[in-house]
Length: 249
Image (cartoon, rainbow, N blue to C red; front, top):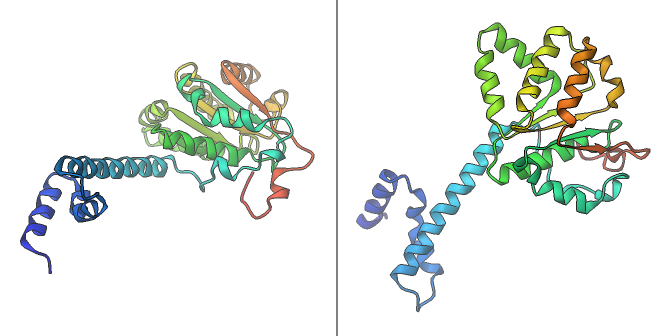
């Protein structure tokens, strides 16, 4: 049966929005016999802070809208022919986000580009950074739809505010002039302000096959590659083939 004191604690915890205070008895049981009230208070406050940070990170990850979750630890770095494990760990520190640098991943299908993109994005989320994940097709469609319903400015502000924008699969579609202009503006607005990760199957010289405007393609590449890490992820032995049970692209 819940006693009166438990009910009072529950009431105050709810009013103060400190739900972990309801578990104060668990904190008491974890204290040593020689620890006093101040130790109990510190432990209780730390429990609340840890819970809030965990909840915040969960919200950030949910908002990022990853198609699935993949971590750096799940990467088999030995499969990468042009990157070393120390370099990948350096990227995983997310210093590139703090420095407002970009990452462009270029490689044939199945070489781990999406896995690495998600893993870096997840690391950024764990560091409390706001992240958004899109395929190029989904981002293009969302921009067109937002413009149609007069919500483009709102969407552009949301994209500009996120610290890391991930654009996956920039290679499978051909964008018309209007789509190209919208995508270009999103990326151009981030230049030297926020970071972006782009993955593609096409080398830069083939990007003209995706966009109608040659001048815009040149400007787009200039903005993406300025202050950037350009990763060569081409491989004769695709990552996906060696890890066929994992949904990696």
